[in-house]
Structures are given as structure tokens and as C-alpha cells.
Length: 153
Image (tube, rainbow, N blue to C red; front, side):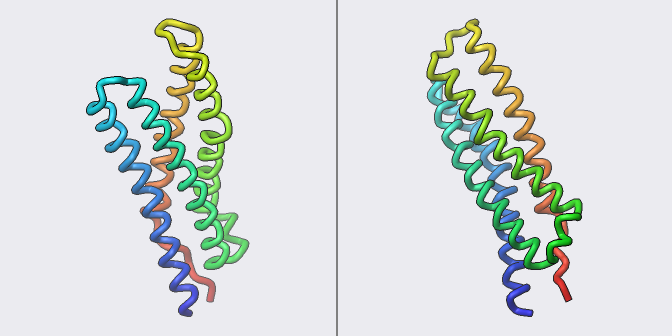
């Protein structure tokens, strides 16, 4: 059916864009940003803004992929590993957007003086955020590398 084919193409495109953006930004663009800008605070601010935009892109992509999953495989699709991985990715994005980023921003607004309690807490949150980003990236690669959803007959 033509509609199913179109939805399948959208699904593949969106999952590839999301996974590709995770890799390109987190492992190429941001490291280059920190190598190119001498002032770490400025590089961190720009990187934070980029990651924030990437999280909104990821949230949008996740919703589109959920809709594609239901359209292509029905509601039973939510019982698959692929759906669980996708829902985990969305949860990680929401955790970053709703918890980690606001907490880190609050600490930055207080001022991060080397050796201060705020700087220590920021470093811990940054470490948690980095680990979650690696997990998100690996899950994204799993989704992008997997076969397209099975179309209902």
C-alpha cells in the first residue's frame, strides 16, 4: 500500500536524522567547538544551546517514530523491543530537558567558581548527562540500524 510505503520512508528518514544528529553533534561538532574556542565557558554555553535544540529535535523525532510504529504495525507494536528502545530514548530526552538541563542552568546562574560546591555539583551533573548521552547515542544507533517496521497485511 502506498501510504504504508510513505510512512516507512518517513520512519527511516527521521530515525536516521536523529541518530545522525546525535553522533555528528555529540562526537564531532562539540569536541571541535571546544578545540576551536579558547574560552571554555563560551564553548560550554554554545554546546549547551546546541544540545538543548538537539533534545527538542529528538523529542519531535521520537513522537513521529511512535506514530509511524503504530501506523505500520498497530498498537501491538508497543510490545516490541524496538518500541521499548524508542520509549527509553524519549525518556532520556525528557530527563535531560526537564531535570538535568534546568539544574545545570541554575548552577551556572549562581556562578561556577573553580573549587566551589556549585562547580562540583555542575561537574557531577555534567558527568551524568554525558553518560546518558552515550546511552542515548547507542540506543539511537540501534534504532537506526534496525530493519524497518513490519507493515501490517
